[in-house]
Image (cartoon, rainbow, N blue to C red):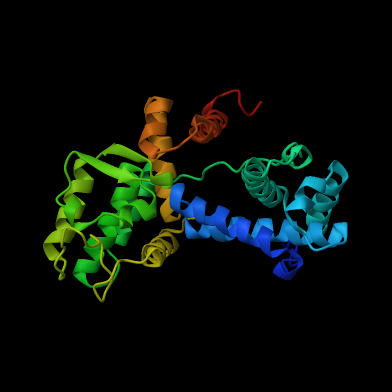
Length: 320
């Protein structure tokens, strides 16, 4: 079954008054500077809000200024959401767009003093949340071993093994692993990580991760100055996430694993395996750097699904 085609959104900035465009630019700059949002998030939020404002300007028959937001009613919000669904946007993507619109509108309403209730009260479409897709413990180990066997220069193999071992052994995001500097080596028993929104957390470092990083540092041909990236590309610059993703892709193809076996799946695996071993949910939340416990609770659903799979495969009465 082919995926539903999504028609391009109307994102003509000329439909939006300069004052509103300037306000949106200031809001996005604040997200970047004060909340540490990634460039990918900034780009997605900007596109979502621009599409909403351009639609409303055309829908309400005028050039969209700040006053336009105060004039938007419940029926206008329904018209926008129907338009978005009509062009093929999924409930999940529409929920993300609505969240961006609400965040921007709330920020602007507080500054300008207008009532934004119809926008802020709009109901997000329901959708089934995707569960994390972790690897099994044996598969996670096999992936790391396979990355280490791939035909590349010895120091690059050591580097890739060190990175994927950090993802699985410490539950790091790939951006967090690649943000480490020479000052972090050699790794100690604890690692201070700066995650999303500039939030700091302390992560225990397992011996396997310390050993993998030490093995990489010992053979890396570049001087790893304290203020420079720890993980280097072939020419000595900062290692690109795409290189790690390609290493994982080659490993999963060699092992016959699904496309969900990505670098981020190793972080999911870290959390799921800790939970299965009796880890405390709030402790895992701290280790992962999740702002909300509800995000971490998704792993309890994964554990329940795996438990039912084992039950159905092994219980003598499960098959009736």
